[in-house]
Length: 186
Figure 1 (cartoon, rainbow, N blue to C red):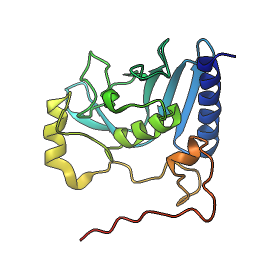
Figure 2: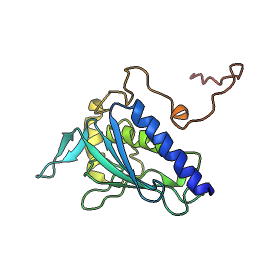
Figure 3: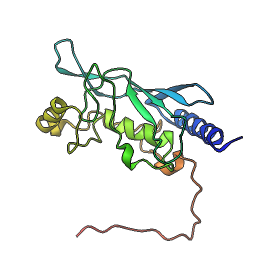
Figure 4: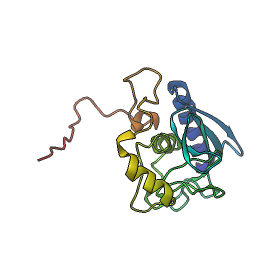
């Protein structure tokens, strides 16, 4: 088994674990050794109505494609909207692009990590107004910050038991005597 095939198998395993533990996230995989995912988020986010005005939607679908060079540096997953999502970092229709800061992507980030980041983007817990793709959505955010995030529910099935990304990524647990870093705000 080559390194790409091995990584794709680990990604699928991580996504299955996420699906088992998530109440608001579902997915299907296809392609060579699961190199393409369609992810469904069942949370409040925004889309546009027929008149072009933002409205709440409770189901959003995106596609994640893992390129032939994945998981090497410079070969970040490609994310596209299947259902139109109104968000500063999602291209407005008819385009389907999603800005996930691919220049920050490293091979250490798993597909499950990316899915959780996208979940937080869809529900407006995460957005970047400094380098947006949708200026109309930026104006909406600036006028409606008090309404954000759109959906305060955790992705995890049991309330209050949201897992850290490291666990979803199947990272090894640190030894009990490992030190911890604490950030203190002054």
